Length: 303
Image 1 (cartoon, rainbow, N blue to C red):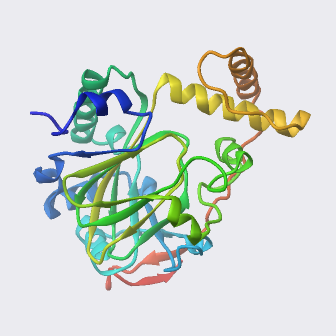
Image 2: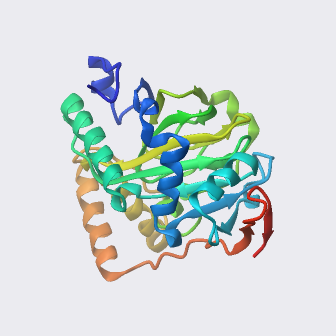
């Protein structure tokens, strides 16, 4: 049985090259029931669990705060997500739990069989988040697909071009000089694709396309899958080299695609710089500013 139920020749052709939506059947699996999620939260490495809260204004991205899960059980963490305003991020779940490794293998084997696209650097992460929680305007270096399992969320996907994202902002992100989130203008919503995700829906978008997410007023459970392809890795390295060239030589380097002579030179620059450890990444690291309350799972206490 296929994971995705509505492949077409056009979707297979455009996969990784365009914004696409799909139907899937993962939401029907017991892995994502309350019992399955509680077991996941109990078994996932606690030191890697991302716990976040945020404000309500989509412009106020600096209200994104990191917290500590403490010693809460999986049942208590799930209750905190149901009753509070938190976003639980379980990155690379496929690297830590065998059933999620098997799920990632199933998904990527189907994608390759349908599209012929080779993928690597596969990160299958689980997102468990509260009603009305949001993720602020940001972009990712890798390719991304977002699979809705429970609840409903709205996703805005913006063009990967000015004014939505500048070359400099893209370079800072790839060079890991800053957080993924950055300034957002609500007027940009007029130029966005809007996707309402319900259980059994998936959306994937072009590499580096900015996006933001708002949950409806109920628990949300999603799979966030990041991955690279040869073309995506080449683009990331071109952007990396552009950032270095802009800092050392000035000018206004462009992002080329394909095996353009400039691309080959930039790949050499990126590889040499990475081997030399330059520039040293200096991302904004969020301090832990709150902890979850075991007695009242939806409440936040000072760290």
